[in-house]
Length: 517
Image (cartoon, rainbow, N blue to C red):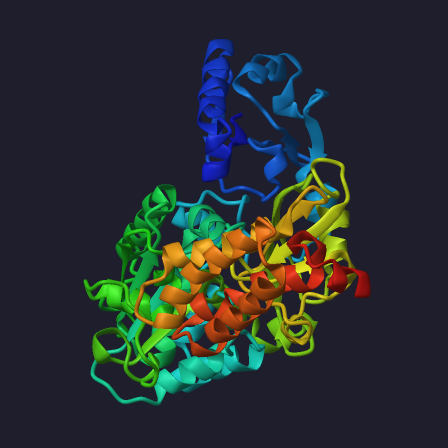
């Protein structure tokens, strides 16, 4: 009887040697005359254990990790195919505390199924949402999404149902669905994990979106740095076309939806929806003025839904189980679950999907295990390179869009980068200005010039030059960026800069404010 062994094909696991481990397991089995079936699954999200190998047993999947090529022979000697005792044996995957305490809705299949097997996807409740959607009219589909309380997971947190309803009610011969897969924020990888580990859920979500608003063409705008995701997505799209889940007559329903992947050229600013559309149209990625909104005049001047990967990948379970089911998770106006990504100086980096309401402290210590260095955590940056730096005094803030907004912070895409007490926050503030200067599209003066001047002012502050003049000047520059920039790149650069200055003034040489605090 063949035994199934799971070795992740996730790019993080591959970077840690998963391909070599899979090859070594196959060779050892062949040499020993053992029949095994190796499945290259997605990652379970416990990245400190990668490559994490799983073996299907009668009791459930048993995990071993982190496994290196040199460990494979010893695993066979320990009878790991039957869950044998070994120093790398972690026990049943589903019982691991990090994993067991999560509430996985969007990531329900990631790490469990073969990412490019349509049969495996359907076996694990895939395409149930689409089949329900095919039996509804467009308005009912949009109502389910609206009732769920789903908000954009890309950073802006705009209600998804309102955006879809606008596109639905804007008459046009052609409408588009765009998936923003230009995941460029530091410390974020949930989009990549979905695209590499469960691409069909994104394909299904985009198809449902098309049915909901009357769009017949979709594009996944993928960052060039994700070659593994590109391969997996294209394989899934081809399989969906072949089985009738994409094309001119979806499952004989008379509805049409076509989908393709387009690759970006590496510009961070193309994560902004209007720059993205400019790039898709073959132009330089410059931010457009609003209005008009993309929902009314977007790609090629047509009504366009632009949603993040996680937003669209959350749609199938909403159409499968209903908007009320999804809305029952979360708190306040933040409904459903959020995939949090822990990285930086953290003992247990990885992905945690849970309902809104967890605190930063719970994430950092109960899931993350504290800093990797063992030193106190001094600050975390939440929401990417344009997110605020949050001190220890704010670690009890619950994950909730409004709770973060109340303390001048952003949840963004859910990335959390951790710093211990050796970090110099003035250097981090300088990096934020430098990042903005490097990534600015140049269309608006506050962002293009302000970030450059900001980097220069930060250099003077770090050198201790004329602080009584330069610190007020830095605040003034931030005010200009905040209120005068055309898009969020310039408009949010003040978040990390001012939060660092306000919470860690001693690193800027501002000892008067530090003593007052």
